Image 1 (cartoon, rainbow, N blue to C red):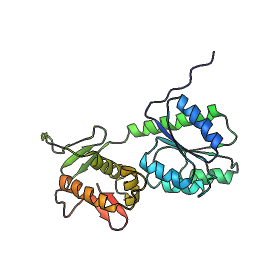
Image 2 (cartoon, rainbow, N blue to C red):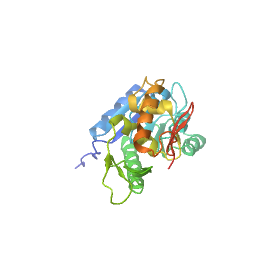
Image 3 (tube, rainbow, N blue to C red):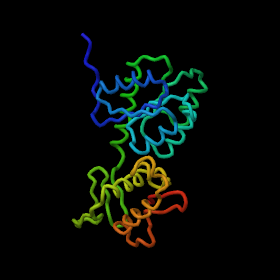
Length: 240
């Protein structure tokens, strides 16, 4: 008797980047049947926008996209995105496979493919990501405050002090993106798209307002911040 299909956690989100309509439909049906939340993008630029606004737990990516090559999409994603990327492509040469893996893909499946094999590779990639995530601290210190990203709590870092700090959902969205990439520049457009959604890339005044609020709450000297830094004309950085 055939076993029941593997069930994914309800919150596991997969982004399919593919311009073949029938293939997207087949992938969507099979993933949703296993309780994955499915997002789709038909072009590379759309994929970058969707990934920034609703970060997926894994990406299934075709290389032959109509606007930009899939390897360029991987390069752009790997500037900030660390979850699994599985390439699904008709390109079968060793050079294409090596090139995709070298720029950051986690696995490479060639077309035509068996759906069961692709799903098994996806599960394996998600397990590896989950195991690695368990080893990564989900806390960061900003000034005198300890930020717990898992519990969504901010409290005094000093032992014995019970004071806590309230952040708004928007402030949490910005702070989490920065703290998850310590020492790395996070572009203004990426922050705006991730927190507010596509179409807000030019609203840099939103970021200035909320970053000023975060500094007033978290930095010892908001006028001379040590941790939540501005990179003029580019974006922001969390410096541990």
